[in-house]
Length: 96
Image (tube, rainbow, N blue to C red; front, side):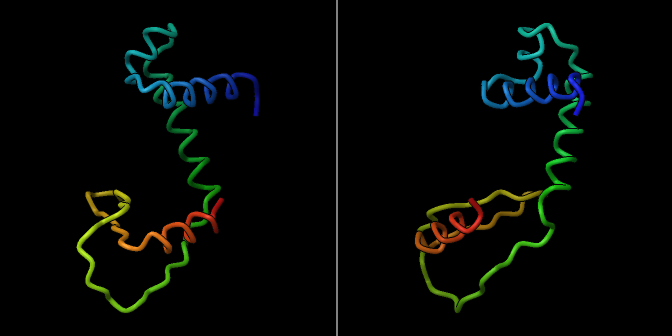
């Protein structure tokens, strides 16, 4: 990675951690908005390429539980809901 790429990727991380919109972050940091979007896109493509496309999933018999303890919002409005805290803990520990 060259210095320019490192600098932009650092800005992407800072913006995400700041809670500011991209537009406001760019204004405050005196950055070009379009360039920021470009480098953010490059960053995301690299992240996606580094992550396995397949995630193991355990399917168990359906259990009636009304309380959703954790949910994951996917593309196109799809949602993965978890009802079992033990499963969520195990799932996350295997990936950290």
